[in-house]
Image (cartoon, rainbow, N blue to C red; front, top):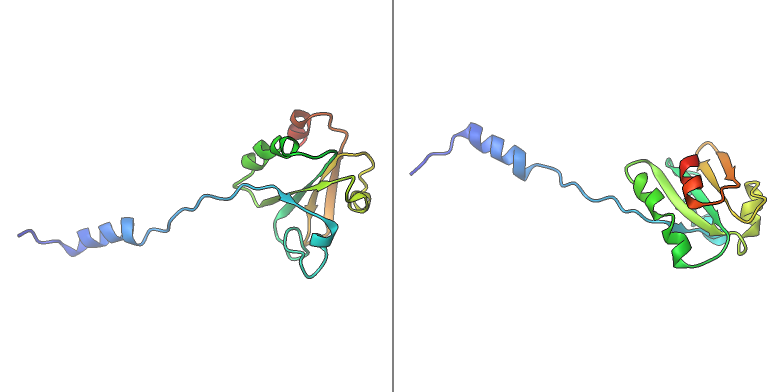
Length: 132
């Protein structure tokens, strides 16, 4: 019968039993409406959110348009950034609130400090991706 030494047991337990499991971070693009952004349901990009919030103002609809921005979400999945999109024609007051004058654009928003930067005039997804 072999005897297990206490040092070997500690080494095994620290490597396997007490190790924290690494979970895969979710990569998602959240649909944001004015109703969802008002208190008390302001969880996505609300005032107390410490993450940056990237709001994409999209002209048009459809899964293909939204899926074209998923590589951007995956690129920043390890960073403290929340990605949300707004359909500009449905929520023109949200676009106006951030000074988006065209049909599409983006805002990088820091909710805790109430500061933001507006990106406008990107003609394609690749151009927008390089701006960020």
